[in-house]
Length: 238
Ligand SMILES: Nc1ncnc2c1ncn2[C@@H]1O[C@H](COP(=O)(O)OP(=O)(O)OP(=O)(O)O)[C@@H](O)[C@H]1O
Image 1 (cartoon, rainbow, N blue to C red):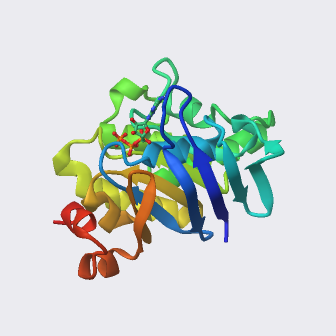
Image 2: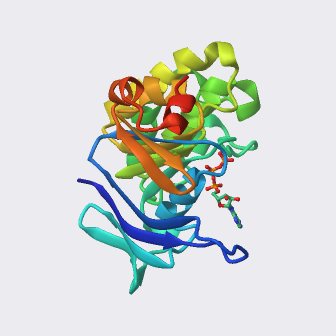
Image 3: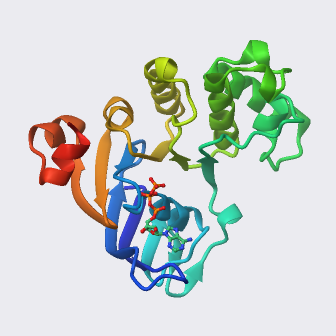
């Protein structure tokens, strides 16, 4: 198992209620997990806690054998070695595709960087576009640059927040397939957030359905669709 989240409690500072209460989740190595739920169900909060943008009030998060947060530990976000893909991709407009991808690579070895960039451009199929700027490529291509940049630090885990929300609806199904293929080829474990059942069904190995900060059902898409645990879950898949 790669990620273990145990007994997590979390309340935003200006809030009177817990957003997460005794939250537990396990993710296997190489698995793609989708956190699915309506707006406000707590999906982004889980990502923020795993990435270290927020600190839990109680509980534990482990990546592999390493505790990244518990009562006595708080590993800083930049030390967690987690790759992030944001909703808007957050590419640097003044940097080329290749420069964007290499941005987070700390090793200052020219040969290493050269090999890394050629491996990643090949993985995401952007070899021909390496010298273009973000405004000169499509939304789907920008997303692949963001994914390559997240993978460039050789993370064991990547987190993606609504990775498809900025894409043209007509392209979404092709891009979902592409993204899944790239993630699987890279072997990385991925947790992504969506409110769209089609994203979850087409990409995730496991879907985790959230409602008011609680997991109401988890498992393979087919099992959830055939056997929803409650009307909320059925509604999400209708
Ligand atoms: N900074 C904040 N301060 C106080 N409450 C917050 C804050 N951010 C989120 N919340 C609350 O925490 C709960 C979970 O929010 P969260 O953003 O995790 O949900 P979400 O499922 O990701 O929603 P969306 O799909 O709209 O992004 C909501 O009730 C929300 O209002």
